[in-house]
Image (cartoon, rainbow, N blue to C red; front, side, top):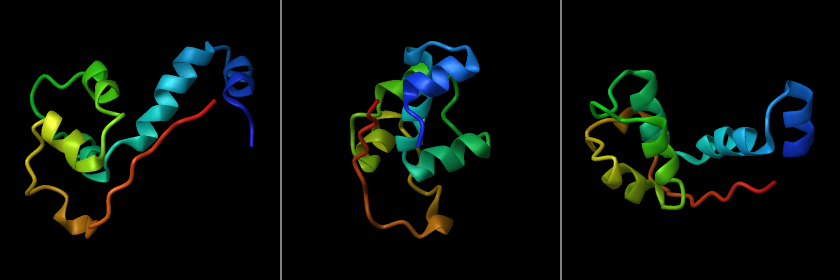
Length: 86
């Protein structure tokens, strides 16, 4: 597994840029599904998504005011707190 620094160097990007983008893998699956379906609340920006990463999935969804009716097809009942490390 490559380090964030190695990935950044290989891609010609900054460590910070790569770290922030990798941290998006910690988003709630329901948020990811809504993003792919074009169903995020109107006006949601990348900064909004990055701002909720330190929270549990239900807290992320609440902060983004995501409709909890979405994502039921995933059958996800557990929540995970994800910490991205360099």
